[in-house]
Image 1 (cartoon, helix red, strand yellow):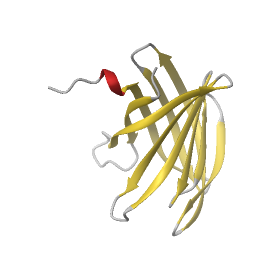
Image 2 (cartoon, rainbow, N blue to C red):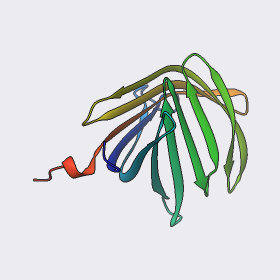
Image 3 (cartoon, rainbow, N blue to C red):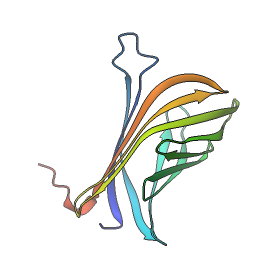
Image 4 (cartoon, rainbow, N blue to C red):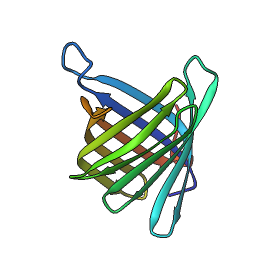
Length: 148
């Protein structure tokens, strides 16, 4: 895999959709990929809608664990480990929330052309169940993308 990659990310929250289909959140962006000490890393920035500010994101994955760290307007370190619950402080400009991530499934598959990360989890906010969620990331070499 090259250092310059394209990230296609999709998140889905189920509890807030009135028809039960889930609310999708999608992002496609350029990212940097590298490997260090038996772990793999992905770095990218995302813009905060309506704020004109960005959040720096670092995704670390190895074995059957995915970690997402956000820094900037929002600060959080989320750990997705299959069969485990992890707690984290979710800091926003409006206050801090305690979030719990109850990970049911983690899937990491890799080929020369694609790295696929997926986590399915339950989300708690301030110790109250909020939603079932999924997060999918597809990472591909940017130099292999052909636009027609």
